[in-house]
Image: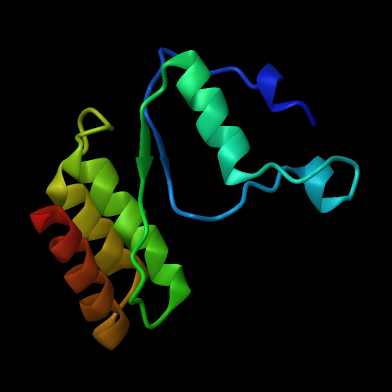
Length: 112
């Protein structure tokens, strides 16, 4: 897969954690792995702002998604979506200790 062919729209920021990008062709061993450097270089060449998100001290790596969502909200990247939307989504998807841990991480990231 040639990432140069990937279309970007309006040069919106690219928000990512420190994970690898695995398009289907990579997963099927039909293409070489797309590295973080590949993505960074492509974004730089196209003038796309990269917002890298990584929270090292997470008890569950799936919580990285909360860190990404908090940065999306902190930078106001989705027009019309406010804090109440994120809070409602968390409450719809989680409960108890899991909700509290994820909500805490989200709020910590918002505080900067």
